[in-house]
Image (tube, rainbow, N blue to C red; front, side, top):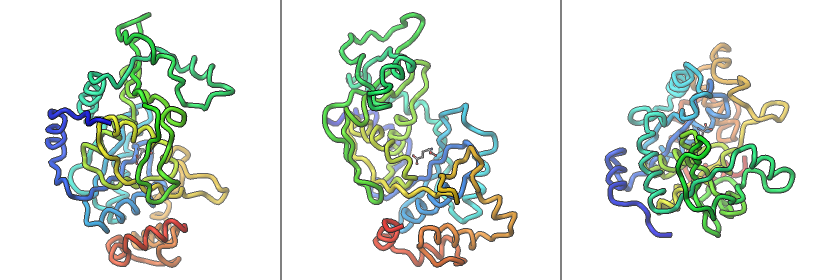
Length: 318
Ligand code: GLU
């Protein structure tokens, strides 16, 4: 695929991130929908560890575009938990809500280069036709052949979809299942801007990985399927995807994954029980068998005793 990025976008990237092109850079990107639970904290620890083991910078990005789901005080509690654990990030906290101008600029560039098409299918209509057969969530491409009329129709603007070419989307996956999904049949033409103007999470996230020069994305295995659409956006921008590390989810005693919204257990409970940061790091690391149960060590001490190669092997077995 040809390189899309016009020079003004390249310049924008340099301006936005003031990047050292060669540096390794990781990010932790929670949504501020509630206090972090133990699974989130474990992902944060691993993201920090994997980045610092490579001598890289570690950024904290708050994924707060989906405003109705944001909870007051959640960002402050995230920052406090990370600091308490000794997981200190570099530079200012980045918020997606403050970066909408960047996403809109990239969206216009994609639109002008003919890689997006307007779509007038409603969610309800798509739900009706996909059940019970079609693969849920994969858009069947109804609006592809229509003339790109993009103005108001029935008082509604269209949404904008990225047109995926036939072929596989691939990314370097260091931990989860092989990074490979078929574009048209397993991912489908992704909405990047909804009819109501909402900029899609996949657009914002892909643009941020590129604009911030992220080399390693460490996140939960539940986000593995989201990598397809994000890699599709990166491909259309003509840039290489970062390396992805999709970590196993933390399950509760009933085998259910923890959830922020259900108030999945977080540091507040451990703090009430008098658990100190070193014991908390020990517990988080022991849950992945990186250290023996009952270990007490700071994040820095954990960093001293880990190596990237062996860490990856240990994590693959966990
Ligand atoms: N903000 C999203 C979440 O917390 C995605 C994070 C990511 O891409 O790492 O689930």
